[in-house]
Image (cartoon, rainbow, N blue to C red):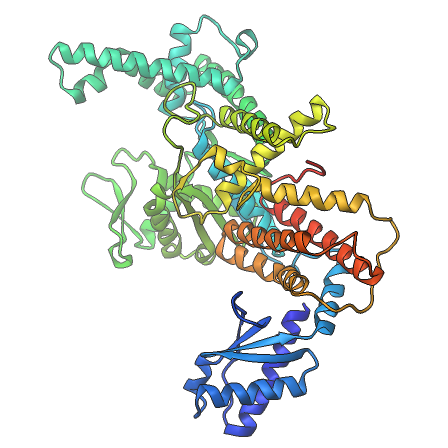
Length: 592
């Protein structure tokens, strides 16, 4: 990139003049963007140099500033604010910079790193529909996968479906007892909603039976264990593990209903996977690793024959990895699944697990165990931890009254978008079908952007109406700006837009510099696994463009050279909005 090349050249000049004047070889020269309130385009940090150079800030700033202005055509002037040297870039350099990125058809796609990452996200249970928490998980994991790919990596998107265990047996028991043969076809319900309905029924009956037992003198613990419907679910789980044919047939049928329902939700949400893993296939994995770990003294046995890992040296505690009856725990399974993925995809350099922050400790233990077992790739495992999503009280309660259903939330978001767009009068010339598609794009864009603009680790209070505001740091604001740019594009001739030299306005300079920062933003977002960096970069760029749009004529510019430049700048902003929005999984409509 030209900006990186410029920084390298300026660094050489700074090192040259410091060596010449002070006989000091600088260790490095630090650059940062100039703060908005100060004049300049790029800033050199002088504080760090003072540790090596025997002089004061004022003398050092004047020395470097005068030298760069004289020796570099790219620098047109400078100013000093405390320990910062703010450099102004010449119009010639900025136009050359813009022309370079304008001609780069792969702009926003970094050079290949030759690395492959697997990103896991979603990973739901098969006893109920996806909910609001799953939406944050999917939106976050999918965006991180996109960003890693844009940063030059190969990415494999995956999930592990939790399709076995007591949870699905509860839905199966309730359907057998109360379902009367209901199917998704006979009820018109999505399969995941139908199975979720019987999970709720199980829970209702279970609680009623516990109350009866407690009234008969049972303790809370005994009532929970002795409730007849719970005993039936445990027996069904034993039958499943014993490979009982009838149980397996029912399990397969009801899980298939759920998979079909999930696939509809994923398609609507705009996410997909390259590889699926199922817990029913992986729950026995990891036993060989336990034996290996015992031989390597990573694990030890207790008198009851259970197997543990002592992780106190890593600041953790003792962790059970095999029960006394030699049955596996989740940690055992996760150890085995990690290795299985390396067997399936030996080219993997690292894995990213998108899982809520309630599992922080689990993943610390998993990664430490894999490192202690001697797997070199274990140092490249990352837990993409995220906080919960809350809704304001009374907003969009789910049909079940406890969890906000993903399908219901997406429908409500489209309705909210329809209501607000109608009030603003943004629907002229749209057919009913086009309106429906637009409302889905706006509603989903609002939802995704609201989630992704926040640092993943933070808890979110999601306000549906605020998220669909067409002003401010929202998805619809970005989408509307893109549509506005496409309106300009439709009025421009297909002929190649050409310009040579124009005098740049401050707002144009700011946009060019912002466009030039995009590759570095992608790299930083990939390094930090944070789509928030892309989202907030995008918002700042859109603000800059709208400010230019309001104050500088584009198609109405009287000078043809200026008009050509502003059109080219506008279209490039539009292309970048579309690319960055795509990294976030957010569609941008051609008109609004």
